[in-house]
Length: 288
Length: 105
Image (cartoon, rainbow over all chains, first blue to last red; front, top):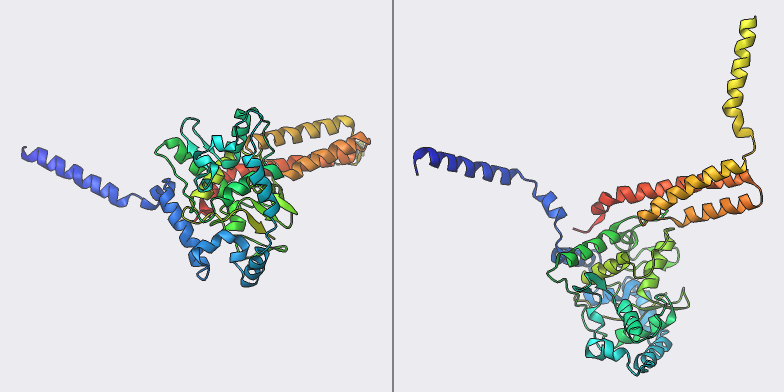
């Protein structure tokens, strides 16, 4: 290497270092999709905001935000309002379809204790598959008509499956597939995007204002919000699925809801479940 | 004098052609034009997956008023629906980047 070449190489290296030094690292970081960092920041935000709330208690939604409400909830749990749904779900789950098969044949471990693994990213389909969707696909594959995603039958089935998984930590995986990462990111975008005439995003209520009242309701924190699904809501005088919760949230802010299990809702459930990884399944839940 | 008269006549005509038209009752054709504009904007909002319930309600109110022959009300509701739909389009478009400001980091 002669002197001239050496000078050129040194100059090039110095220039590269200078460019790297002046590059805006924050901009690059903001556009990077990093679910692990997201989940860590998400959890930190809520534990910092509510230092007195135990991590596993966030899954109890509004009841984790207020001591009096927590006591009310503990009393309510003596005779839980979702019990009838649980019984119905158990009966439905074990009853064979007309072809002799049952839900047990569609799921790993015969569907027992697996709630914490849903939704998952199906690499064959290239999309997120939620538990509600998997249940209806199971029905259709066995010649049965699908259930409405927002009615009692679906709530009962998911209630039973959640009950058999109680205490198991959410374990949502993002496979090494760019489509999975894209689904996660789209779910995140949906969560933070303002919509409806009221110009609310999911985060407006469940990140900016958990513990605050919106009319008579105490808003739940987004951390662990899906761990209790499905829920019995006194306001609804009945059970509600995750689909019912999402569509109702949209209409409450004066946005036209999408169809249950549209891609946006599936991605949203994927994102919200992932950032609650490690928190226990507590469904079925009860809410005011 | 005739010059002044001619100017006054022209001014009167101009006033009648502009401001005075709003005082006239709306016709079915006005309603149809206004409704088409509202529905087109709402369709665009649907494409952005961001329709508002109030837009649909204003369109329904316009159609109901038209059925009873109240085209003034039908046009007013159609115009309201169009404005709402355009606001939802603006929201969806601006939120494509603004959502990032809200995220937990």
